[in-house]
Image (cartoon, rainbow, N blue to C red; front, top):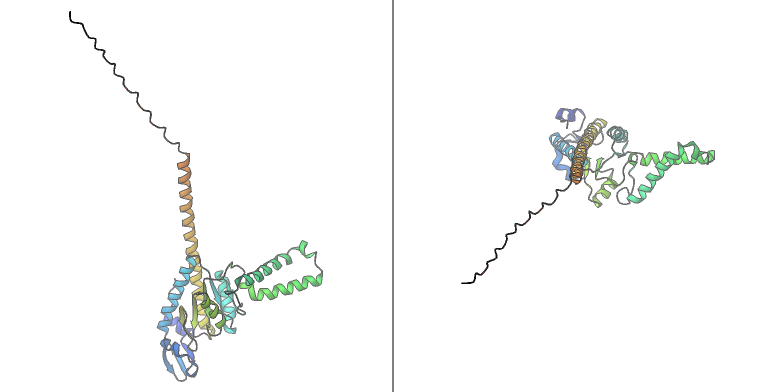
Length: 277
């Protein structure tokens, strides 16, 4: 995993917190000091906790868990989309899908609906059965679903971990995750409650700060996928080797049972009684 430096965090503006009159007292442990009317975040903690969160993401992916990236605020939306698509990770960047965790079966139906519409719209034989107006309505509905569900079409169940930009704004996602005990990796500014499993104290408004942190975390996702692939290759090789041994063992004929040697018969001597003359 690439090491991040304090200089990179500083140049990205990760150290700027919110105004001192808008702070959350629970975030006090991450504040270095106030400068004027702005809190300054302790970047040594940011570095340590960011690297810890990155390792957790790697371990989750290697353990066959899924990580979803969430960032719907204006500054984060395009950054989350670009970084997640590059890493091949699921993401939400328009608005949180209510019930994604607590009511997955209903959300799954909408995802399947989107996938079916995509297949129909690219199949000329299917589209011949619909009028031009019906085709336009289908395309409009597909675009609407795509804007909401486009980043999560590859998942088959709710994620094992959420990675969130601005946990204060994404309070609905945080609430659903906590309800199901799903760990949260989150960028936590000085105005937010850092009561999550993997808080990363940093500026969650500046584009440079968000980009640096999200790129680091999606790189951890990519590294986890690479390690997961290696792990699966080793498991497959071990399984094939075990199967080959079992086949070889099955084809070797069992040894014939040892034949018992014939018993030696000892002739009985008949003792004749001689009559005494």
